[in-house]
Image 1 (cartoon, rainbow, N blue to C red):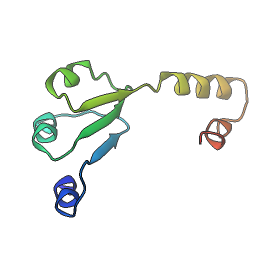
Image 2 (tube, helix red, strand yellow; image 1 turned 120 degrees about the vertical axis):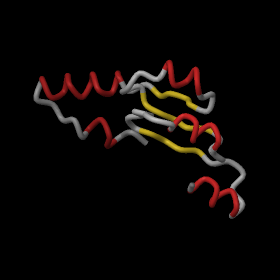
Image 3 (cartoon, one colour; image 1 turned 90 degrees about the vertical axis):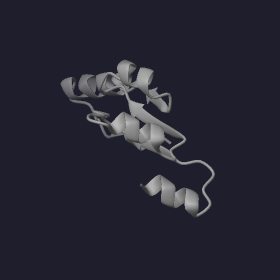
Image 4 (cartoon, rainbow, N blue to C red; image 1 turned 180 degrees about the vertical axis):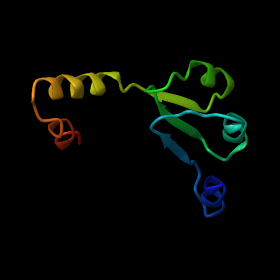
Length: 87
């Protein structure tokens, strides 16, 4: 796994980010056994049960940005504006 390679090369902590975390099969076991320090996963897929099985999982909320994008599309407004000023 890439996290192991990074740790071998001197990384002290390795993080992963998942947009739509389906996390099927033995993925939670693999994450638990991995060198990953933390895995951030969006709430676009419910994660409560996954978090109970894997303490490395942390979630970030996406509903507000999805709702605003839908509102903007409905009203004929710019969606790209949401991301132009994100940083």
